[in-house]
Length: 142
Image (cartoon, rainbow, N blue to C red; front, side, top):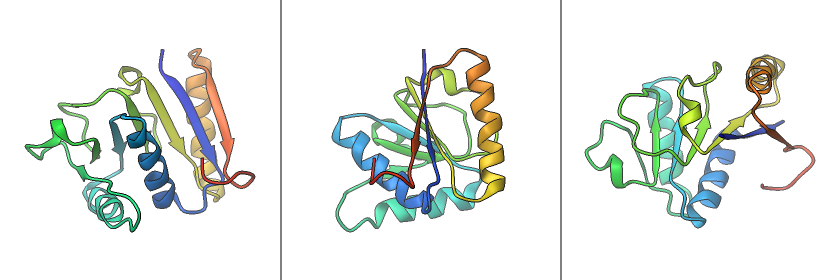
């Protein structure tokens, strides 16, 4: 069954994606960052590629090297190439999340984002998924 993790009160979501990507890559895991649109794909990829202390290579699913790239950033769900870690950056729950071993939800500090996250949390909980919650305002980098 998919492990579900929520990171609440995240002040800088892009930095959290970079921190988690670095952590997962150091463990040899492949991940997909599921964003909302093509502009978000470009912004997230640029952010990951420009990290000063880490090499965080990412491509979209349409790239011919996607199947050998450890980080996929996309808003489309066709032809998924990884099934280890999914970082959801969309408001609805991803309909394909259960094919992944681990799902990470990143929730910001604004109330609208928290309200959307509460709905996703309830969705996962009501279906019997075990959920781990981290409050980013009370902890360092996870």
